[in-house]
Amino acid sequence: MTDKTFSLTNNSTGDSVELPVRQGAMGPDVVDIGTLYRNHGVFTFDPGFVSTGSCESQITYIDGEKGVLLYRGYPIEQLAGKSNFIEVAYLLLYGELPSKTQLSEFSGSITHHTMINETLLRFFNGFHYNAHPMAMVSGVISSMSAFYHDSMKIDDPVHREIFAHRVIAKIPTVAAAAYKHSMGQPFIYPRNDLDYCSNLLNMFFSVPCEPYEINPIAAEAIDLLFILHADHEQNCSTSTVRLAGSSGANPYAAIAAGVSALWGPAHGGANEAVLKMLNEIGSVENIPKFVARAKDKNDPFRLMGFGHRVYKNFDPRATLIRDMCHKVLKATGGDANGPLFELALALEEVALKDEYFIEKNLYPNVDFYSGIIYRALGIPVSMFTVMFAVARTVGWVAHWLEMIADPQGRIGRPRQLYTGAPLRDYVPVSERD
Ligand code: SDX
Image (cartoon, rainbow, N blue to C red; front, side, top):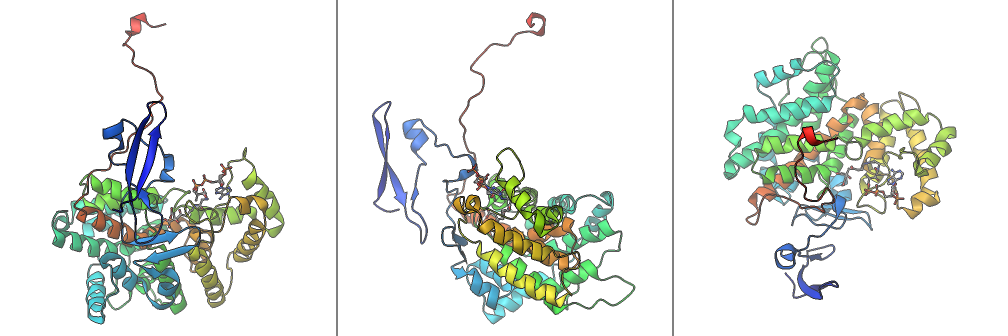
């Protein structure tokens, strides 16, 4: 708490209030309005939480004006260039970069939790072959609470750590099983001799009838994408996990809620929507027509992969992913399904010169280029958001752990501005018109 205060005056009653101001380690100060309703009988109103801090956190910091993203204080560019996903997962969960021993033990624990219960594996046979993979993943993750009872006591730190390692270890296996089910192919078991991202590729693409050779560039690209998608402060799906977890729901249910929230095209579903949009645009000649549609208030079409609630500058992740696109396309023989990367580069160039996008600070976000890489690696569009969920599970778990351990924690329960019918008496149907 600082000794700074924020004054509010209710001009209709003359009532004025001094609200305490809290200062973080970085970023804007916050005005603590926790006593506003109790002492002054008014709510604040902020649909979409544009100006509202929902919690205190020490995990990730974003400066949207400068395009800065820090995981536990470390710049995303440094982590992307020098670390790997498992090490970043440890950093997000425990707050510090691991020692060699800590990294080896953490990595070993994750590796030895990658299998899922055979009965849980059979759940996939209950889905229609063309079920959206996100429906399968959210259903199976939620069902984990029916199997793993040794990690459900949320007030037991040992249970919490087992849950954290277990769900991070198993989410790639669940993702790969959803993919294999949709392909009608046999499930491939995890292999303990492979690193996290190579294991995922093997579970996705190997088949029993021939050896599968993992492309190291593909594993490197997945590792980078997972680092960049691992966490992002209080985004929609992470806030959903915190809110679901605040009721004391079991952690698997909270993560499943996050999977569902991520699915939306305004959030993690955007990467899938970007590829569909690029295919719909089809050629560079059509770009002006679609940019015009994106600017037309009467047209619901939006440029998917553009814009962000927080970044009013380049999303630093988009820049890093765009650079990786060049490397992956070169290593995998180019744009297998047509020149979508060239089209994406051209679209970015046109949009960034357009007055509308400049005025509204609309830049490519993390989802704009990620699908280009996934597609080049042979991952189908329907699996793009699942890949986002695999990476973001680390951030969801880190925030769930932080929320559960908060001694000030309480159930999240926002209020509202009621504009519905005033008080009225019931009229029996016999007396109604
Ligand atoms: C992710 O929060 C996170 O951190 C999310 C994420 C993470 O890592 O967790 O970064 C991941 O979800 C990235 C965003 C992926 N979504 C998309 O790419 C979908 C397309 N983008 C938009 O739907 C939109 O930009 C949002 C949802 C990302 C942000 O929406 P906001 O903050 O609510 O902004 P807004 O809708 O109020 O837009 C502000 C203005 C509006 O015009 P006006 O009403 O002021 O005239 O900008 C316009 C919008 O119409 N606008 C766009 C646009 N995005 C915003 N116009 C055309 N194309 C777009 N993409």
